[in-house]
Amino acid sequence: MARYERPKFEVILTESSFELRKYKDFYIVEYSNENDPEIENGFGTLFRYISRENKTLQKISMTVPVIEEIAGNQMKMAFVVPKMQWDHIPEPNSHLLSVKKFESGIFAVIKYSGFSNEGKEHIMIEKLSDWVVAKNYQEASNYMLAFFNPPFTPPMFRHNEIMVRVV
Image 1 (cartoon, one colour):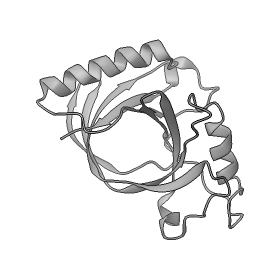
Image 2: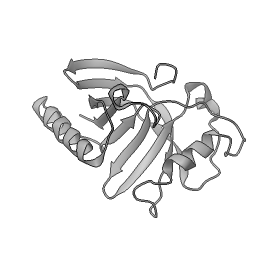
Image 3: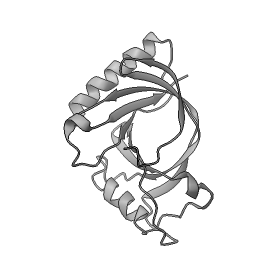
Image 4: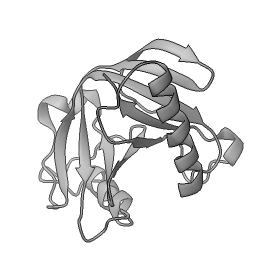
């Protein structure tokens, strides 16, 4: 995990598996497809983009995390753009991809290990929501799942997070 670039943030508060973080701006390339609400084709489409399937045929370094946004019944998936390319982010070939600025802000985060699945994610979202309320914050975004490991990583070494913007 340490060999991949990740967005910059400052930890404001840590309590057990929870953190309050202040993220700086960064850029993402986001996959969104109304005909693919479970984003089954998201990773492949994004991987082809960073593997030179973009307007400049430029290879883009892999970063972490891969972010999945839960937006009602429609999910979105995004790769973080490496900082060295922020001034010249290649335009995607696919109309299903868009380059977006991930705005700075305060985020509540819960960290967990093992394989992630819908049931576990639901439990973690509930725990995070309770923690946000207990800290007197209000949720100001959709929940986002953040995955840091390749699929072949053993469960005990996996690092996952769920985050939500708070005010």
